[in-house]
Amino acid sequence: MSDATVEIEIDKININKIDINNNGIDINNDRIDNNINNNIINNKPHNGKPITEIETSPNGKYLVTYSEDDHSIVGWDVDKNQFKLEFSIKISDQVGHIRISDDKRLAYIYATKKLGESGKIKIYDMNNDQQIKLDCDFGDYYSYCTFNLKNELILYNNFNRDYVMRKIILIYSTRTKNNKWKCKKLCEIPEDIEFISISKYDKLYLFSNNSIYEWDLFTEKSIKIFGNDEEMKYSYYYNTSDIRISGNEKFICMRIENKITIYSNELEFSTTSVNVIQLRTLIIHPVLCPLLFHLLFPLFSNIPNNEFWDSIMKDCRELCFGHLKQHESPKEFLPNNIQSASNCAFGILDGD
View 1 (cartoon, one colour):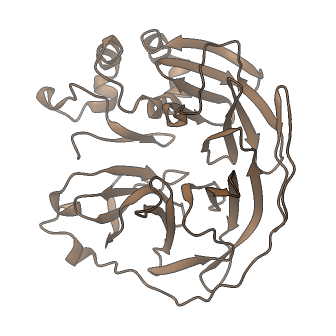
View 2: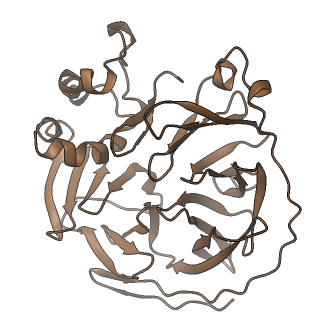
View 3: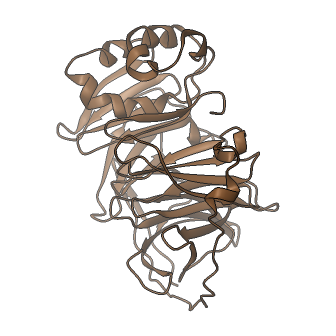
């Protein structure tokens, strides 16, 4: 595998590809025990234990829930806004990151004691309950995974090599046989650029020099979507998980601390920048609400109780939480770990 050279220019990021040297991996067709009847007691998913994390597939066809207390993952078919139980599995791993594809492939990163936040990855085809192997596997250093709209798996891997931090993006084709996925593209992020996230539209979001960039994994073109004219302090210890990004073909919505910035792909500049208090105007706007609500909603995970929460609930209680009784409405936080599809949103309220 050859090293990549990277050139960085103002307002532009170029990330060169790396040649792939695939190593053969034996496939042992490991299976996972998908026994819905035995894994669910009294019709309670996760046996009534709290839900730790939820995720939806790129097109909102499937939803997966993970319970750390129950050591279980449950999958649902929610394609027609009706919850149909698809699978329930018991695991011994401590899951740190989980994803589901629209063709029911499950991937999760699980922690290892020596690596902290990074870990190994396991992938299962829940159509036949068989484990999937990767032909180009970096082992213990994965920290992010996602599926795109083509059901391809995209991984982010970071590790230290010769005192240099290596940050690798791997894209796997899932249209292969024998439960072995082939790496079709591999890119390296420069050491001084911070990874934020990857969208289902194959957009890689990066932080550098007080700016946020969007880099297309396939066209290899980049744009700056948040400029350094904004107040955004950075240090070596900056936690990029505090930056939340949600986007589609028309808009990119970013939450940086308590400030929301909306970037227009058509106009190619940030159309508005508001704090969470002012955001109420956008939420109730008759034209902007249908365009932006499902993009903005996932940005609000774990916002503490404040004027924003009160104002949003005033207008959206019936829309978002109409099925809850008054005393059941969340008091301290918005739903944790909010995930949204084009026509609905899912969140965890008090572990349920």
